Image (tube, rainbow, N blue to C red; front, side, top):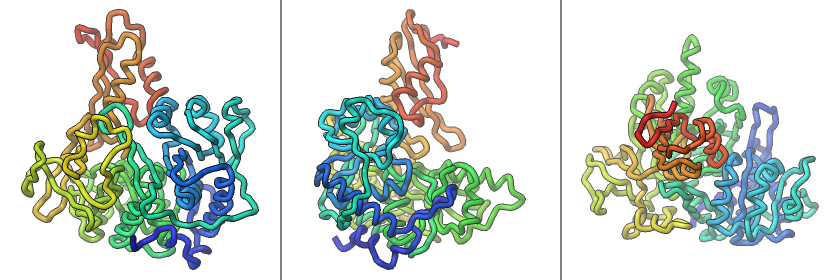
Length: 493
């Protein structure tokens, strides 16, 4: 492994620079601040028993806290298991059944709101928080709780071995349960190095952060890559308002987005007398496919083309359009020479350019197994290739064009959504005989709907069903449209 992102991040010339700028709070954090906090917490983590190979659940709202936790866990060789802080107890329990979580590293608020599920995790040795609240914990959590202290001793930050597994993310592929995806330190170093070759960040470059950093897209492109290159992360906590104003006022150089943020920028521009000049900006879009129509409207309005990319939890960022040569309607070309891509038919044979088939990947940084894969093994792996479940084709220039998906999952706001999981959760209610979740597309954006078919003695309303789903699923998985049908297929009003 020729590149080491931790060594890059620890360069002496970066330490006085601003690493994170919380513009809504007027607070700046330097690289030295991040490193100093990590060195203090590292000593504490070692004292309470966090060791190489331990699975550590993390849940942070703040990019600063996430960066500090990553430095600590990298140094220990522990495995970071990042989750959305808004994860439900039900979702957390599924993760706890899949992997042996030994520690939880989070905020006091998360500890309080998820006390039931955390208390039920077998094998959990300690819960670590960066702060302490006034609310009392249950007896079980009180016994497990440690408040991380900035100890007098400061341990040295060091990179893990290249082959050390450092993260375990979760994805959903239509089986109703999460699948675990592990990546090594070398995988992340390779991804960061490929981003550097294409986008060439330099110290002081400003990146506006509008995306969460716990998923793979945000973790690599919004946190690890820019910090390793000495960039300033400009954090806008009120994420969906005043984007154009923030770009202008803070002289933003780079922006990573999902398609809905491009739509939001267009909406903001429509309320101005003239669209602002964004010519100095580099925009990379991921999470979901940017439609040709949205790409064209954005390019015409701002005289700037977004660089659509593509990645998976299973592969990290893998495709992108290059700045200055973005091709509308495509996902771009391969970012890393050590990765292979082919388009295959249902039997696994490669198809010619222009013909649609399944996007298949193989090479460095592409997983060869899932945790908890079960029947998914045969569905997603064939002769050393990862079958992504995404359908596309190669155009005449070698760019990959996304067409659709072959399995029962989708993406909402860049998040993986398992339609079977929604259906199974709905069927937990007494009186539901069957359920069908499906996707509709409005202005290029996917939206969730749900139809349930009930027995004669059902006794719940649409509101009851919606509340049941919200109690067990993350908010982005809850369908916006719910219909209830009797056995005769007459809709219940």
